Image 1 (tube, rainbow, N blue to C red):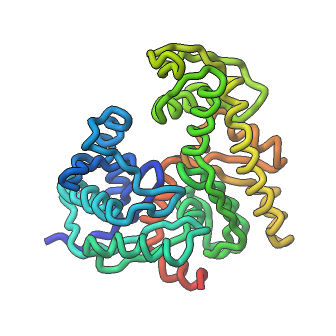
Image 2: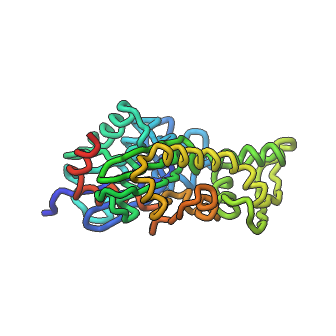
Amino acid sequence: MLSNAEIGIDLGTANILIYSKTKGIVLNEPSVVAIDMNTKQVVAVGSEAKEMVGKTPQNIVPIRPLKDGVIADYDVTAQMLKEFLKKVSKKMGLSMRKPTVVVCTPSGSTTVERRAIHNAVTSYGAKHVHLIEEPVAAAIGADLPVDEPIANVIVDIGGGTSEVGIISFGGVVSCNSIRIGGDKMDEEITHFIRKKYNILIGERTAENIKMDIGHAHEEHTEEKMEVRGRDMVTGLPKTVTVSSKEVYSALKESLQQILETIRATLEECPPELSGDIVDRGIVLTGGGALLNGMKDWLADEIIVPVHIAPNPLESVAIGTGRALKMITKLQKAAK
């Protein structure tokens, strides 16, 4: 008989990751659900549902139930979690009877939003549900010594939100959250291409452009990429060539806002901890950390060392899982 599972869940706007204490990361899939509107049944979740985005008949609608890091559609999120946990228990042979779950929440989320996350997990039958703030989870997952009295600065650029936190002695000293992340950058690219070339592109195409030729630093070697979309005048498919300099101009404003958030957080830092930041620098996690030139651009702007976490995409999930060991200590610090 298997003992109760202990799992950590990173409820991300773009991806959901599930971490098991015994097996590490057991699931990493897009947080997308495809629903048949006639029967209200879930047709597909995760990667399978993401493949359907922009390509489905009218009765099947792919939904992203998490918006800006919080639950936008409660029922669909609960269904999606159930499907994912079923998948994990089947694939891993983990007993999901009354698991103990740690879920991370954005640092700026309201009590109502936190309750929605708590209830969505409890409805699956979890025995204990602990909520942990995203910057703390990201810092633990990035191997930072969060329980020591030194400043650990974490910048987590996710799909829906970017979180900046200074963590010392197991608690958050100062943190700011901004509802700008990978999704917002994709939107900016879509707007830019529509405005300049009169072409409509889908969100997956925008994401591919960002990943292939998106740059955070203005000074970079120019790259070009062919982009296919629908001409807004003729309504026919059309291909255009987009350069990385154009993509940079589309992303510039979002990056600037993330930078302002980092600066604001550092300004709130107690002077005693500021010295640590000069020595230790800041650590980047989340998908946004993988944007070309992100590390160098930030280091130039804030003049402290910038490091990228060993596994930026999985840091938060690993942190939620590891937090199980230190949850009582962390909850004391949070009070």
